[in-house]
Amino acid sequence: MKSASAGPVAQALLPAASALLPTFGEKRSHECERGRHECLRHIGLLLLSTLSLSAAPTYKDVSSIFAARCYGCHAAAVKMGSLNLQTWDGFQEGGTHGKIVVPGKSAESRLYLLITGKEMPAMPMDGSKLSPEQIETIRAWIDAGAVGGVSIEKSSDASLPKIEPKVPIKPQIFDLAYSPDGKLLALAGYQEVRLVDPATKQELAALKGHAGTVRSIAFSRDGKLLAAAGGLPARSGEVLIWDVEQRKLLHTMRGHSDCIYGVAFSPDGQSIATASYDKLVKLFDIASEKEIRTYKDHIDAVYAVAFTPDGQRLVSGAADRTIKIWNVATGERLYTLSEPQDGINTIAVDPTGKFVAAAGLDKSIRIWSLGEKEGTLLHSQIAHEDAILRLAWSPDGSELISSSADRTVKVFRAGDLTELHSFPEPDWVYGLQFAPNGKSFAIGRFDGTLTITP
Ligand code: HEC
Picture 1 (cartoon, rainbow, N blue to C red):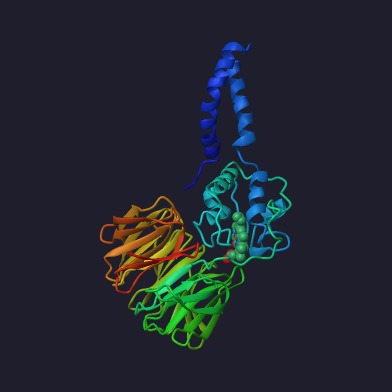
Picture 2: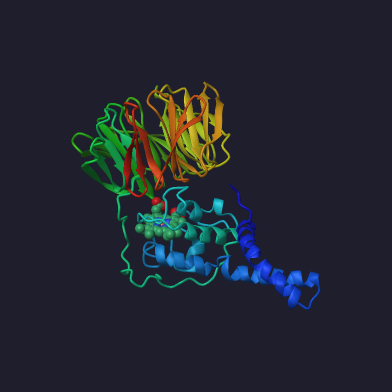
């Protein structure tokens, strides 16, 4: 996924060159008094200046996109994520997690990863998306070196009302989970979890009071409790435990120094494991709301965590390209699976607890068998054309579903990763799970829509 800095310029050059060459070719024969060699240089210079006018985007082009689409939340007055995109200084400073571009490397730039939905939280966070052309402008500008300039001062759309910090217009779906009896579907949203009836899609309840975006949710095995995790970027992680039947908040746990992206119930329902942007995995006791243990070895954000069904081991997947297997009780790291070529977004332990599937930015799904002292890679396959966002096993372990930033959801035979179905998606799918009866699966999208397939 590393892109060469010449990429966009070269790409832009091709159509420009073929469009212009015939004209200049003619001119050369009629008008150009220089020698052939000189004349070709002449053409080259003209082409280059044409390019810098039209094809290679400048910071001004990028800034006008920010002005139209981002200043509502990232300007001097409203710095969500501590990010001010209204000045070049602010842009360079970055947000709560530091710089947002790596010049010349869009694929490593948080700005690009977030506007393309390859990493969470996708931007802009108002339920809209940048157009493919706007995304391409930003990509080309980063890959050409991310050269600075003067920012557009105000939102370019004068008709936009000025400008309260907006909360997302539609209730986006950042994760979803079925209750074990299949009668409820919980949808993670901005500061709330909605409970809907999967049969009718009617909303039954909204569980409110979460600090920020709820990024991960899980039901306890008996279906009585729901854990909803999130927190405040660069400040703290938070997990709320709800009594599902009473719709009542039972416990609040705080820990971590950044948001939680993954939460899992221990099979006995007494503790929860959390995976955080702060690079740590933690275990909390629910009754006492106390932190019990920290699992420390990842060197980048941890996005996913799962228990094996016997409750003995934890599996975590991180942006550091690894999956780690831990002894729950001792905190010891048992081993590391390190075949992936890029960051991990999602992991899924199969119903027997013998296998783990993981996927992320390298577009591949890998399945390992989990041994006592090491894992063995069984399958590795490029499964999508872009970053993979979510994976889930069917309850009988025979199928695996995946969603990707390429805007498809795919169904694979788990035994050999044969692709069985591919569904085009209107938007990024961050919520994906089989119904407990295995007959259908739920797809929850960034644009707030929910589909149950078939
Ligand atoms: C509706 C409000 C909203 C809009 C519009 C919005 N953002 Fe954000 N943005 C946020 C919030 C809130 C955060 C912090 C969220 C977090 O990290 O969980 C954030 C964080 C970010 C970050 C990460 C900062 C860091 O270091 O963690 C980047 C990069 C970003 N936004 C880029 C953009 C861009 C580019 C646009 C316009 C295309 C945009 N945002 C539009 C609300 C918004």
